[in-house]
Amino acid sequence: MDLQSILTDYRERFLTRYGHQLNSDQWSALNALSGCRQGQYGDLVLSCQNCTGRTTMPRSCGHRSCNQCQYQNTEQWLDRQLKKQLPVNYYMVTFTLPYELRALAKAHPLTVYALLMRSASSTLKRFGLNKKGLQAELGLCAVLHTHTRKLDYHPHVHIVVPGGGVHRARREWRKVKSDYLFNGRALAKVFRGELLNQLATAGLALPKTPPRWIVQCQKVGRGKEALQYLSRYLYRGVISNQNIIESSGTHVTFRYRESKTNTWKTRTLLGEAFIALLLQHVLPKGFRRARDYGFLHGNAKAILQIVQWVLQVERPAQQEKRPVKITCPHCSGNMQVIGVRPARASPPPNQ
Image 1 (cartoon, rainbow, N blue to C red):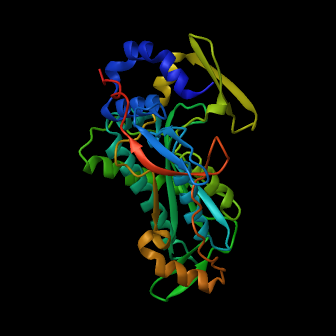
Image 2: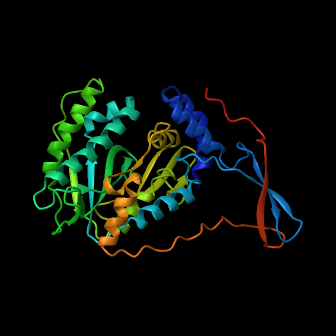
Image 3: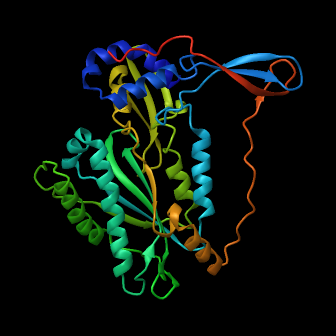
């Protein structure tokens, strides 16, 4: 069972029930996922380097919501983050958008998601500069998620924080000396003020102030596992084909791992409701889900190199990127792309 088959089987029922609710980004994702590797985007023309064999291969859609695409982008992002690693404790700080503001996020996703990430990073920066014994500029790696493990709508920002920072005035590295970074309740209080102020400045009509603001801060070892976790949802959609268990013709069943018990659970929905569940997590065009701040930002490479030198981090030699190998069906040799054949058919209409 795979997602593309489900989109084909339940498309008409989905459009009948939910089509009027889709925005342009969701239409684009639906059409891309349905046509990925189906000839909608043309074909690659391949020639074997060992024999005279030639063949074609349908092109991928390249959409970041597609669970068949973007594997290389995911690996490249993770590789970049691991090269920035420091020999210190790492912390995961999670800022959750309150339930009362989720309707506002659905109506204005580009604005609310951006302000959510800005407020979360600003809160951590403030705490890093004000914490006694630290008073330094932190490095932050932030990733926006919009779903729970059950795929319900639940916008939140995960931020991986190395345990230390740069004190620019004294030109020194300051390390967090304990397993404790910041208090979650104190973070939530400042985060509340930051986000409400940003939303009001943006001119968005706010509902009554949410009573609960949740920020979690926990130690996550040396950071590698946390970064690997974040990488899984960056470019390859919110569900993998292996987690789609069954399609009965009316209902779809998928599995997810429950966080509290770490056991597998299943959820069954009408096919059209399952598609709607997935498409609500499509991000606005041009929105960057992953962002770096402080000495981990792309413009701070010089500072990061100095920090790694101070902490005696061994910088591995630059490795050449390995090209993707396509095997010849005739002689098992390597095939090379020699051209692109235009699409066989137009993409499905939006209406």
